[in-house]
Amino acid sequence: MGEPLGVAVLGAGHMGADHIRRLDRVVSGARVAAVADPDAERAAAAVAGLADVTVHTDPEAALDAPGVDAVLIASPGPAHEAALLGAFARNLPVLCEKPMVPDSAGALRVVEAEARLGRRLAQIGFMRRYDAEYRRLKALLDGGTLGRPLMLHCVHRNVSSPPGFTSAQLIDSSVSHEIDAARWLLGEELTAVTVRRPASSHAAPEGLIDPQFVLFETERGALADVEVFVNCGFGYQVRCEAVCEAGAARIGEDHSMLVTAAASARREVARDYLVRFADAYDREVQDWVDATRAGRVTGPGAWDGYAASVVAEAGVRALESGDRVAVELAPRPDLYAAVSR
Image (cartoon, rainbow, N blue to C red; front, side):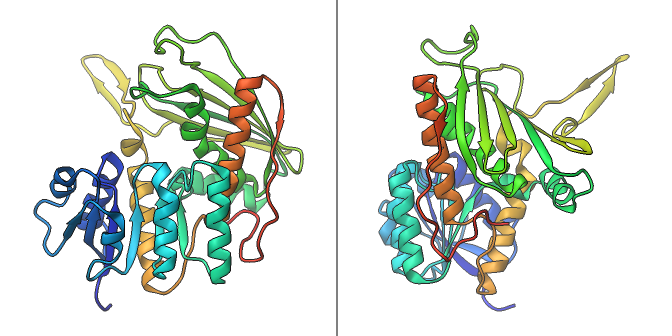
């Protein structure tokens, strides 16, 4: 099988540390070769016990570290553009956590830079495409037995929002996953966004508009709605129902353990995304490693990351204005399919 893929991990926070653990203990064919984080102590702690790993505060230094063959970007979104362009300049394949780049102008610069290379180097971390339930739903819709999809009904709930979380982030951080999932499941672009604002929950921090109801329109006339509620208090829940001309299919209902004891039964609810989507993250990173070692790039690409940023920006404008906002995408380079399969 040859030498393992040497991966530089940029970012050693909650997500980055989990990916370091995954590369070391779960994924085969790869090793952590370097880690970079502005907090040197946090970076060192994330790779404690791992051999032959260099620790850096500068991401550029990590990209240039000995033994680095590929890059996994798990730093905050505003740092992603520079990291992606740095990887492209070094011809390094990349797995970049979402958002690829938070603002659509920066995301388009990444698309254009990769297009100039003439080949894909970036995979974007929309991990729901790797979840077993989502994959079954995708296969069912693609198979056509339920007829043409007409509507998607989605739910995205978190126990609580982190400090400083804004009303806009409900869309550009939380709902960004539903944006990509809707594009992927339906195989078409989203063309317009409307956001409705019910009365905020008493559990929401002061000034936070939570929950929100987001409605997407698609280029072939389907609708996708999302209830996003990031201070529900009771658990992390993600559900999706596809309503088609000849039937409907729903996922996310039973992704939990049923415990029966003391003459009662209770169903456990995941507390965060790293629990609910643990298998999806494992499969995503393993597929990326396998494809990279084979000289291929698969999964959602830079165009998907760009499209998600454009739709999210339209969603934030719709939230602020109360109006229906059209989604306007730049011309798509020939390198990319409309929606990566």
